[in-house]
Length: 423
Length: 164
Image (cartoon, rainbow over all chains, first blue to last red):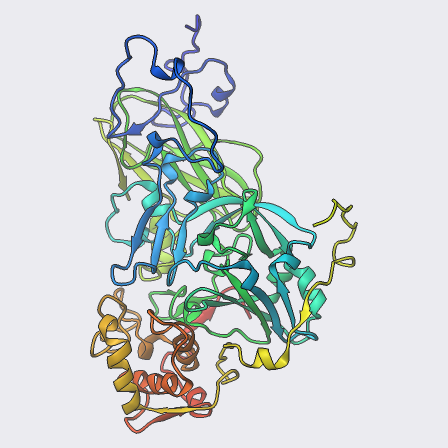
């Protein structure tokens, strides 16, 4: 019963199509509409008290689970029917708020299933161009000084449907949800490298997992020394099996495949191993027929998660447009939003703290007048990297590269309030 | 775990140093990385004919009898060139190093029992896959000397973006 609701319905636009000043969020009592899942049904107001007011609740549980009413907030799985352990599961980005991905919803990419590893039988071996090859057991690693960092991990193949000739019609998370964000805690790799003693000709570290297939990837030694971690904890708890238990590599800002899970071996070398995944895969064909290789950094990118495909706007109103931005190069400096298909742009508000190589939540109020509109967002990072329009990205790279798609995402709002993906 | 010790000011200098020296004999028997120059390749040998029989038994169900693909990707028979928007990326048309075949097959194949093929069997599969991709002749024998000497057609097809 607010006596005086500020009226965004009469405030001036800051950009075309009804975008309003982001500082409106500072006003008390501002009511904003939210796009809702199309299938959502109105709940009837029950007569009388609900039963939970008059009967004892459930007992304690050793490990909490989401409400059964939130069962639809789940990873979406896309796997090879012949080999069910080879595939991905997507984080349902459009169902989540804030920037932290719950551990059970962190995206997955497995090449041959999730190994169930007994930590007592798992070790990490550091060998190759080192003065003293070393073996670390899990208990020993847990005794090293650790560092925590909030970081996104994004698969190099995230958003690859953006290369398709026509826009794919799927929920935002089912296209762009091969990114998640967590607080990762572990042992700085530089400490272990110093303990083994690095030979002067070492330039690369080949990381290998203990999954079926022992996936291996080469990473420049300089990056490993700079900021990589042996990740042991995710959002405060030990890693989940599907995230690499008992340990994974954390390679801040670089493509997901390098964050080798179930890490069992690090071989220092003067050359990369040229593994299948760094030659036949995770390389990007250009129109010339040459391919980009060792494209490690995940580029500057953003995405509106509300409203997005599958949601709908019930009626003309002032809506909260909200989304995620990130860059493997550092902090997000600015996110701009357009409601007129990119003709004009307004700055969105960024939820703090804005951290390097971490998801950043942005928001902006938008007054929808019921006419068709096209919403876009574009991110700029602290190094000046700018998220490109799709047409510019395709002009530069062609459409055969598959990996590292970071083009601007556009959502078309129809006059009936439905939201679809458009180019 | 003991009590909560004060963190050292410079973790590196005061790091616990809990790594155990790796036993060289144990290390030598681990599956190791195979590099383009052949480092890491074990003793052994395999022929195209032996590889064909192994392929039919272990690989054809997913990759197709002729290696043109099935539920898993195509491995041979590229028709559309790499500058075509729908380029065929096969071993023969795309992979820059023959040693990658050994490294990957030994650690990852077959999908149902990875890491179970002998060195001879892996060499034989390399030989057959290179043969069906028209990279080596039908009488080729692959071993630790001949495999790294194979020059792949797309050897120079890659531009290193963030590495020297």
